[in-house]
Amino acid sequence: MHIGVDLRCLLSPHRTGVGEYTFELLTAILNSDSENHYYLFYNSFLGQALILPNFTGPNIHLLKTSYPNKLFNFAIKVFKYPKLDSLIMKRFELPRLDYFFSPHLNFTCLSTKTKHILTVHDLT
Image (cartoon, rainbow, N blue to C red):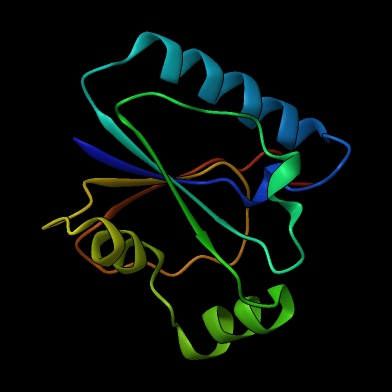
């Protein structure tokens, strides 16, 4: 399977609860699963990539875009573009992305054919 993962919650210099959850969950999954392919997406205009954990492996693929975050989030919210799964499929020449996992409630826009897994941490 081809699984996309939104890493934008890991771009903070100090990990929050959501960042810690995402880091621990991905570390456990990526260390134990060598069959599925994981496409890790993040957007960093100012070089925040140095903060990201070093997820590596033959089935782990990293995709960085470099749009200003406010503009990127505005485009997703208002224009429903870019579709994150389409960015990943185009970059890695995939016919489709089976699932896209959002560990945080970020602005996300996906094609209708991609199944979306979203973690909602708190409803208060």
